[in-house]
Image 1 (cartoon, one colour):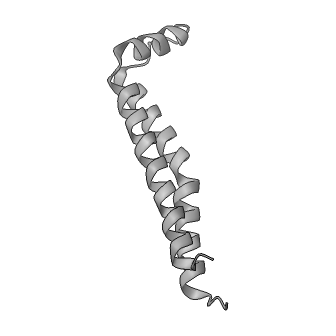
Image 2 (spheres, rainbow, N blue to C red):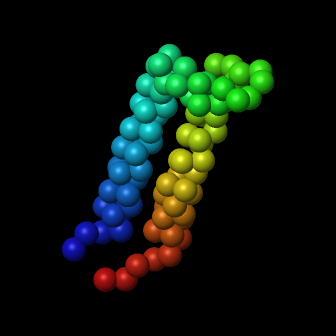
Image 3 (cartoon, rainbow, N blue to C red):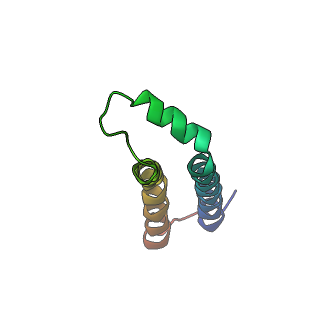
Length: 88
């Protein structure tokens, strides 16, 4: 049987991997000019056309929204495992 510390370490490990993968994905999307041009063309009806800074802002807001729940739950689990004693 695993101890609560091992369980919390596994949870934090998977959250760290998820954050790393999401960070790399946002970096790749922000660097790719073809994705920006495709996004800009999909919004071509707007006048004036959206700029690159707006594109990056939208990517970063989506990134923060995507990571809010895993970070919240990891902090929640830390407090649960630290504050509530578990008996064997």
